[in-house]
Length: 148
Image (cartoon, rainbow, N blue to C red; front, side, top):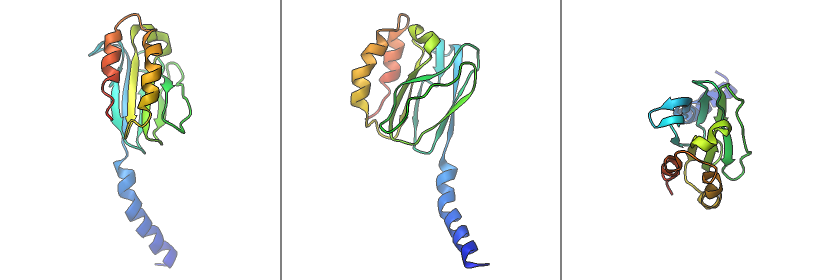
């Protein structure tokens, strides 16, 4: 075995456990779920850097759009009625919603590590909440899951 091959084996042994721990979270976009109508399930995820979240249009007419994202993260929007995978590369909170069903309270939270952008969530969430006509309390409960 050459020196280069030995280095590759050592590096893969060191790095493999880190990659093996990454998780792909599945978020179902539903017309009706355990929490009621027009929901993301799960609606709150506490993930780690390196994880991914795949939005699955289990029922038609849904997509997900970021409202607040962690620092150094670009805003994102999934295509309607299509699966979409989001790579979680920065610590902080993603607050997102389904544009066609925001007024019905279809929001979700992905917390990646620590909530280092909680100040942004606290300042922007009231405006998002004001657009929810049905189930604003459910939205409050989802946001209340954020851990410092």
